[in-house]
Length: 248
Ligand code: 0O2
Image (cartoon, rainbow, N blue to C red; front, side):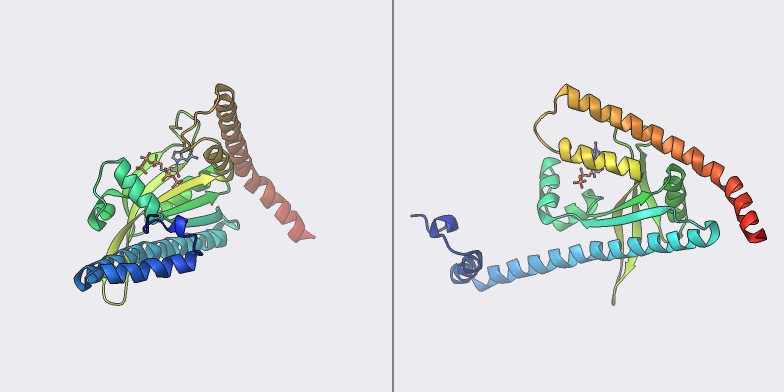
């Protein structure tokens, strides 16, 4: 039996962990143990910068939403999701791109360790929210891809921004990059479905399914356009209604 194979030992996971830790301690010199511990601490600290960037950005979008509701009496943002890329995905992406896996390589080569998805109610809101964010003087726009004006071949639509923002820690200021995806509710439901069916899966999808997905993307585009034009018709009719209510 191979002693390094924990499956053949058939131990519960907690026991397996402590087994490995004690084995590591007994087979590794102090300098190497310190090196492992330093590397782990460095990675944990590095990831915490991105967690802070997510908190900053989420707050920025919440404040922006609140401010807009004061002036326009409605919220442009329907929901905000944040995610920190997992160590596994970070490593896989770097290896896929033939890049080194050091912390500086992560920092220089990956823009999406911190990811924010902002789901807007209407098409115009996507651009209003994006513009309002990048006008803020502590937000630096690094790049943007407009997959709404230029959808991907499969029908994917969204506005992608890469921004850099400062985060202030107790004893340092860091500039951290984050990827922001802005999309409407219709774009989001399409992307979620497509992600489940096809995206990143190695299996190829039948032509029928690909065609139906493209049809759905087209329908969601029409829906967004129609809803957006309705939005522009509401204020005039709405204000008339409001006057009548006030009069009563
Ligand atoms: P996940 O699991 O959502 O995080 P890059 O990230 O710069 O190396 P690329 O292709 O230039 O690669 O990035 P792009 O086009 O800006 O897309 C990055 C993210 O957009 C993806 O992240 C997806 O979240 C989303 N996305 C892009 N294309 C599609 C698509 O066809 N369908 C769906 N459903 N989502 C898409 P990840 O890290 O690949 O995946």
